[in-house]
Image 1 (cartoon, rainbow, N blue to C red):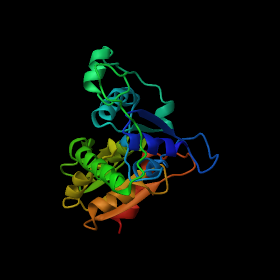
Image 2 (cartoon, rainbow, N blue to C red; image 1 turned 180 degrees about the vertical axis):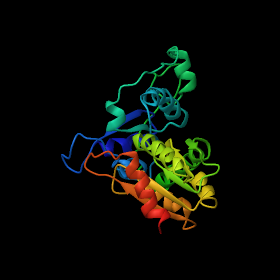
Image 3 (spheres, rainbow, N blue to C red; image 1 turned 45 degrees about the horizontal axis):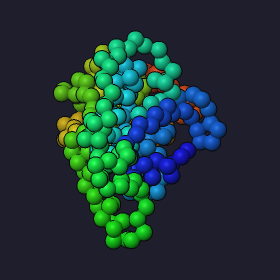
Length: 274
C-alpha cells in the first residue's frame, strides 16, 4: 500500500519513519505473522531507483530503540526509514527500558540543522522547493546519480548485524526478526548435539551485511537462511556468498511459526547429510 507515496518521499528526500508489522498474504491473507514483505521493503515497491533504510527488530526492546535510531538515520541522510517487524514481535509483550527523552529541537535548531525544511521565508532566504519532479532528463539523471552516491555512503557506514558463536562455527543460521530468536535456540540445540552452529542476524536489511556474509563464506561449510516466507532474504545471502559455499532456505508460510527443532532438522537434512 502507498508505495507511490514512499517513492515520492525518497525522490523529494523527505525524512520519515514507516512501521510495517508484517502479516501473511497475498491478498487478504491472514493476520498471523509473516516476513514476506522483505522484497517490497529492500528492493523498492514503488517506481524508480530508490532505497529505504530498513531496520528489523528481534525484540520489543529493539522495537522501541529503533524508533529513535530510524529517525536519526532518516534525518541524517534525508531518506525514508522503515522498521520492518513481523507479527510475532508486533504482538509480543516484554519489559522495555525507555531512553531518556531528548529535548525537542528549537525553531532555531531546525533552521540550522534542516535548511531544506519549509520553515517560512525569513532573512531574505530563497524559497525551499521540495519536489521529486524533474522534467528534464539530464537533470533527473543528475538527481539519480546524487541519490546513488548517498545510498553508497549509507552502505559504507550504517550496516548493523549481530553475531553469536560464529567464531568456531561450521554452519551458520542467518535470520532476522523473530526467526532470529527461534534460530538462536536452534543453534543452542545443535551445539548440544556437537554440531558447531553460529547465528548471524542482519539488523539492517538495507544496507545489508553483504561483506560480513561474504567473509564467512570462506570459513563455514554451509548456511541455512530461515524466514517466514517462501525465500526472499536468502537471495541476498546467495548474492553475498557468490557460490563459495552452499546456501539453503527453510521457511514456513501462511502464518505458521516453526519450532527450533524444525530448524535443526532442516539444517541436518539440507546441509549436513548432503
